Amino acid sequence: MWKFTIRRMLIVIPQIILLSVLVFVLAKMMPGDALTGQLDPDASQESIDNIREKLGWNDPWYQQYGNWVVDLSKGDLGQSFTYKMPVTELIGQRLKNTVWLSLFSVILIYVISVPLGIISGRYNDSILDHAITGYTYLGFATPLFIFALVMLWVFGYHFGWFPTSGSVAPGMEPGSLEYVMSRFKHLLLPSISLALIGVVGTVQYLRSEIIDTKQKDFITTARAKGASESRVYNRHILRNSLLPIAAFFGYEVVNLISGTIFVEMIYGYPGMGQLFLEVIQLRDYSVVTSLVLLYGIAAVVGTLLSDITLSIVDPRIRIK
Amino acid sequence: MAKEVVETTEQNEDSNISPSGLRVFWIEILRDKLALGSLIFFVLVTLTVFIGSALLDLDEITKIDPLSRFLPPSSEHILGTDTGGREIFGQLIYGTRNSLVIGILVTAMSGTIGVLVGLVSGYFGGHTDNVLMRVLDFFLILPFLMIVIIFVSLVPKYTITSFSLIMTAFLWMGIARLVRSKALQERELDYVNASKTLGTSNITIMFSHVFPNITSIIIVNMTLSLASNIGIESGLSFLGFGFPESTPSLGTLLSYATNPTTLEKRWWVWAPAAILILLLMLSVRNVGEALKRAADAQQRRGT
Image 1: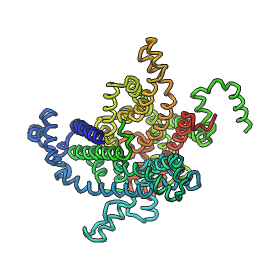
Image 2 (image 1 turned 180 degrees about the horizontal axis):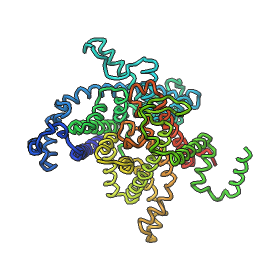
Image 3 (image 1 turned 30 degrees about the horizontal axis):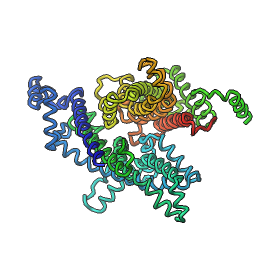
Image 4 (image 1 turned 90 degrees about the vertical axis):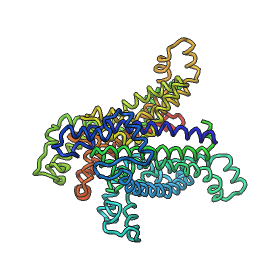
């Protein structure tokens, strides 16, 4: 087990290095830079060159990359040219919102998918199972952004049950109960949209896993020994099927990344995804690189965690 | 019923010959009414939008007419008009065509790259396989959506071709993995060794011996990815990083819904595109699922 864990962890290092190089090169390739349109139009070419020189933008790329990595390791992500504030500060606010959104969605995914999967697997070929299977089939083919739009249209505008944009109602006192409730209300519709589409994979996995286990010999043995139906399910079948699902936690988070970008845009939720779409149009490359790097590292770490927990839960994986 | 009986007797007569791959696919689709209906729907939509876009004048559709902004559907404007007074119906025809073209193009290109990488990796194994799989792993950890968006905003004057190239660059990994695992199994089989002993070149074995044996899985995978690629394209266009602005696509029509008033009160602008994307993706997926069953002899509903 340790051998697998350490080998798996070592892969992460080149992955992150490659990712950072790619992100950096991409940022450097972007047409125009943050200085375009920032300076006085009358500024002479000479003074622009001076500023470029001073910011180190005329150094060879590997030197710039080196400087960038050194700054990164100090926790300095640079300055946002459009927001005129340090990137760490700018992202910090948004990061909190996105983490809440993702966390809440993942919890909802588990809360919804586990019962559905168990019902579907335990009573397979019943009407309920057909309904659930039909739902997963449809959910698999529905693009998240269309679903989120329809949810916003129906529950946000038509019924008016939920706020239609932002992360908190204006004029709330941070820390008060009302503030927390308002945040919660703003969080609810986006995360329900994410979760209702996100459950599909888990439900299908759990269903086929339970149906598979049901026919195994050790279940017949348990039944023959007189174990009650609930004991068979809770003790024997679910123990085997639920552990991998808990280990999927990291994958779920990784899967949510692109989803949060769409959802944040549709619900006007001020998270990192919305910020990304905003700054890429403004060519604020220090923010773009930081965001991609952050999401990339989140994906790498999420996959790593799930891979390792899965290898502990299911020893067959280690042999690979 | 009677037709089925005839079919089975026919098969009994030449039961010593198993039906060819394409025939198995066809039989399975005929047996699955949902898949058959989906296939007919998809073909009809495709024909309509291609013929329709040949008949309709693009300039006429994209011409801005400020006097007829946001008109609800009427006899004059079948599906109403958008913010520039442009006919939604015409944009829908063109948009569907563009989305389909991109979807098919990206699927074909990423399929080709994926099959090549997968075959080479699986067939040769060893170091080749190791290196290629590490490259693949790296592509897999990239945050797809963000990287594509960056590339789209990087290309100075981007067209449909560059857009589909960018998408392809980050979508070949799934099929490559699948083909690799199949090729790894195939290369252990006797027919490959026999061919090698006879001195057949690796390239010939790969493409004319191994490849035909895995085509069914490739067809299934590419059908299913066509469905998801249509979705990805419309998603990117929806965010504003897909088609160039002057080119209508299903996603651009949907992106009008980012305007709260349009979303709330002018459903005719975005709802038809949303429904069409859903139906297209579902129908392609239905066909893909039927093919998937057909490719796996244990799950076939047909003979």
